[in-house]
Amino acid sequence: MPSPEDISQRIEAAIPGSRAEVEDYTGGGDHFRATVTAEAFAGRSRIDQHRLVYDVFGAEIGGAIHALSLKTLVPQQAAPQPQTAEQPTPTQ
Amino acid sequence: MSSNPVRDLPMSPGQPAPPEPQGAPSGESNPIREAIAEAIAEHKVILFMKGTPEAPGCGFSARTVAALQSLDTPFAAVDILPDPRIRQELSAISDWPTIPQLFVNGELVGGCDIVTEMYESGELAQALL
Image (cartoon, rainbow over all chains, first blue to last red; front, side, top):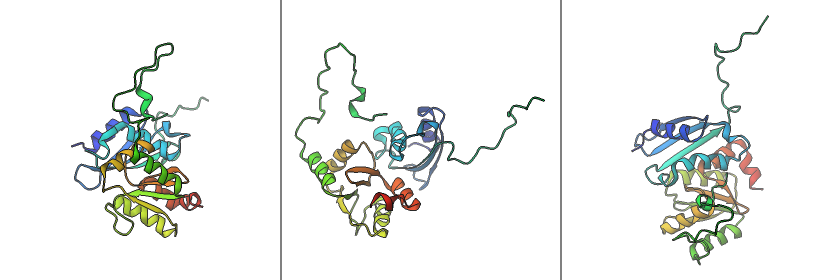
């Protein structure tokens, strides 16, 4: 039975640069809800964005994974990331 | 990216075409697939769901029906539960793994997540015009 962490790791491994937050919303290990943020979604329709994620799991969707509810975002749509200390220091 | 089932076939230019994959239903007569394609073509708004609008068999189907009903949209509904081949063939046509599936003007709009998102943003009402 996949865990939310498994699902999240598989999405992030399959879609380069993606971030996936996954919860098991029934606690039963087969109904998951994922919010996936990826640059790869840019310029794609919602349908195609969701297909990219569903394609990671193939026939498991509807099988071991009874439901995978999706919300897909391109990074600009997601909440802005807090600035980190790695910001380059302006010179002079 | 095309999610066409033929994408994994080896395509090397100059080589003879690979033999037809075994068990591939394409090209064969497939009455269920044809009936589904016909239903999609014939109805402006058609929902493939578990159960019926009056008695949905799944929360996702129920939510999708509720969105359509609250927009007063007339729609055709097909219950996929009586025969597992309906779901199989539908997903083969639409390249979409889950139920429900809403089609408008012959195009897949989405499943419950997308329909709900579009309902909330007002896009669904636009798409149904």
